[in-house]
View (cartoon, rainbow, N blue to C red):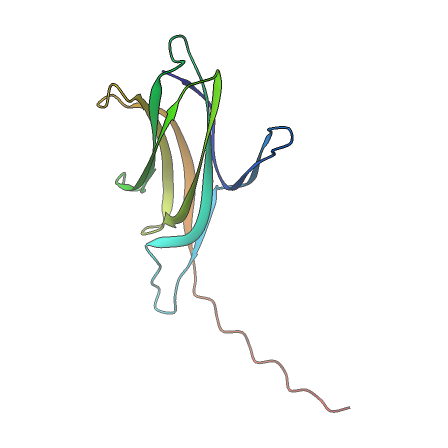
Length: 154
């Protein structure tokens, strides 16, 4: 089973074509959700985010196919969202980059972005390899801006 070298959730993953380096922009540590005037919040925050996994092949992994599963777990431990990506270990290291539109926000608190992996030939055996915390916080409704003062003729 490949070994996870790095997992991160962030606003953007940049891959430099010139020298094949990776940059992570704004790690995703907190998602702030604005309440409306009635105190309601959306069940999915309007946040686009990306994730990066870097895998290293262990003995016997080269040429095999694997699947990674990304789950977003609510504070009450229910899974709110899931994304899967199949990859083949054709080299010693491999990057998996994914983009997600929206972040679950149906309750305030500490969410877990959980990463698991399995060999595609063994569909029932998931190995949990990483848990990444993200805090969802609710912000009070924005007050309407005060009217600008009347202009004074000069």
